[in-house]
Image (tube, rainbow, N blue to C red; front, side, top):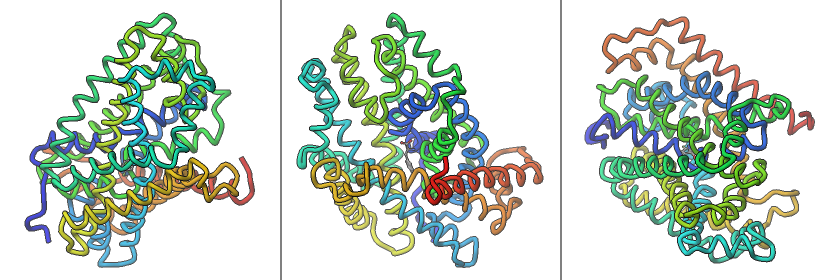
Length: 455
Ligand code: PFF
């Protein structure tokens, strides 16, 4: 089975591909607005702790599971548990990929539209229009045709990259796009911090206001730490399965987490310096990016260029993540069902694009979930994945390592390729146990809240 499996061409290529998966809409769109609504620095601190305490061990578990078995999630769990029911944990990952990509692709489409709006200099018209940027945004997403068109373009690009395979598609494009992403972000950070009043924004992001942090905020931070590092659905198992034995996985994991966190924080700096300097509300919610920013860019010198760069950044980040989500589905059909890459990519890229069409339509008058309060397909898919599917996947992965595969085997795989590294067993067990307990607590909190309305 491992014969002829595709492989990354270099250690660096793997790190960039994994970082490309991790860095996405979660860093640039979700993290800043979540921090904005949940106490700024206090949320940032909890988020950093969750990433180190829970994210890192589960990331390493996923890398090692993939590399040991040279298989995508279903095959990996199955191989290490003698074909037992654990394979359903892999199936949960494939299901999560459908759920996440269906809304991810829609927002990916919005980023293309907004890049072009910025480039055409339309943000100033938007900001000064009757209902302002909010009305323009609401009208755009509710339109039954245009956002679907951009969604299809975004998904088309995702499919084209995946068709080219691991080395020629995912690795090549991650290597090309990640440096561009970093370059754009640095330009935007410099623009942000040189605005008058920028310090307010930095203070907001980094100085904790504990009073604004609720238990709900802590739960969000944990769920987000899974989403932002692409954990809990086997993406990193899949990427790990294309690895050779000579990669130091601990070092790779630390790099991925460092890049992901640094980019989220830099995006926060770029956004909040501008938001505060130009007197806007940081708690703008999910619309912070698509509503608040288009009114800010026209007020700064060079706004059209910076506006374009910002949305291009969001687009690039979304694309390198979207390919990793689609790859989970494709690898399953290649490994387990013996489909060709082309067949699997065209079929499932197409099916997920169709699901996305429902998500997009649910922003407008075709929202069949209207009767369930504020819900639409987007919020349903987003909540289902970040609050439940990814944490459950991550929790069960920790349980799998602890009870089925065994921490000693995990350590053996982790130390392969890391010359001279020796991690003691008992602390490693404690780390997994603790990570599992934290996630279990958060999941129970969510379940109790839904059942009894506590909070
Ligand atoms: N990590 C991506 C982000 O922060 O936007 C989202 C994501 C990608 C989640 C891949 C899950 C995944 F498997």
